[in-house]
Image 1 (cartoon, helix red, strand yellow):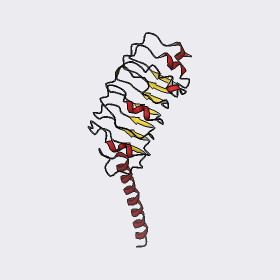
Image 2 (cartoon, one colour):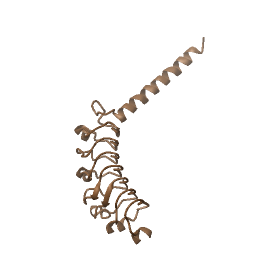
Image 3 (cartoon, rainbow, N blue to C red):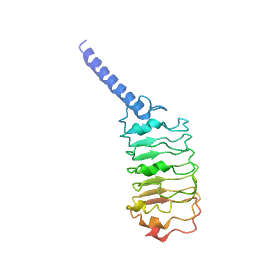
Length: 199
């Protein structure tokens, strides 16, 4: 019948689209290994893999903009691509902020939700480019003293998620964070809200 060629063509197009989608998903997710992946990827997901360390070869992904390594057993980081803009490390086993973060000069979003961060977080670790910082559900008692100073640069912070910690006060330097729009502070130990946060 004359309609068979048209149906065959449609089926072929559908098969090609599905194959490309599956290849894209595999490339972005990468399973739990980076072996054989295109080093020009912009997004990579290594979540819920049971990893105790990230592959050292991840530094070779020179175009990487987003890395999701949530839900693992990580407590340290290897050197990461400086091109990163979004880094998700929630539900791991970090007890302190890794020093490798300071080299990520383009980082905009950082998530450490549900880790083991405790005490007062170290200064001069977070990159000044950060706009969104997620630190909920840890044991944090204090934020970096220089959080609002941003290494001498203008504070870029817009959203700060701190709920479910043990924070008693916010660093005075945060008064310089003029772009700050949202701060979540529930279930902490704050006795008063800084006046600058209400302005």
